[in-house]
Length: 368
Image (cartoon, rainbow, N blue to C red):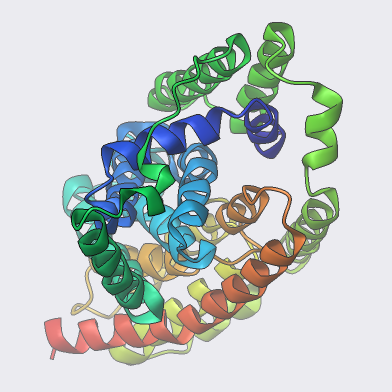
């Protein structure tokens, strides 16, 4: 329903207009746009709307901006998802509230700060090393040419003078309604993002922001069906076997260092093909007290941080909600969607050993 809502608003051109305005405001600071997107996603997520709704709201406009700037959709996805997940443990966000309920007594603000530093740093570093530094250099060269008077070579620097249509204003109102409802209901822990998205779709149809039939055709149904199938299979396995193997492997780790590595690795691996907050955290967090029996070195807060960081570092995976939303935000370009799908798979799988290795390294530094 969230993807359908985005496609419904997208057909009226509202994201294109927002992109034009954003590019004009940042015309001489285009190198900072990805970092602004990162901070915007983090702010929206921290306000309580959550990482999934944040990605749904920010990704379409961000990926349109990326196309206008010649930035890889993969790199922009890292910034959007990285920002949304960096702030995922905000005390007023759904995931932060879930963690507080499953592991009471942990300092929520310290947990938020630690997760923000770890998750944000990895995504920012990935952006720089995987092509962001080269793109920033090219943008610097383009700005120098712009300063020399070659403005005609950059038509995107001039904002469109055409007025906003009623459909575009209606789309803005629907997106604003979606944001406010997520924020207000998220604070009361009564939010159902699918139901809210369905209500906003109905509102969009009433306001006639774009034809519903056209939006339905734009939704990547084959890809969504694939994701739903993977999720269904994992839920069946979880209900049938209870992931007992995961618990047994973690329980057999007698050394604190080995325990951190095993738990982080398994949390990241499961999160590649499932939901961090819906599967991994409810599975691992209740086990923390029993895992730490006889181990006085590792604290509950530290183990909780490692599980949260490991599971959310792989959330760009196309099998997760955030990666799927990013792919669904690409407009009418199947080749670009397939390329992004492969890149996000590689990133998600690569982050499994990175998450485990980072957790183990930090453990050895903090608890030598």
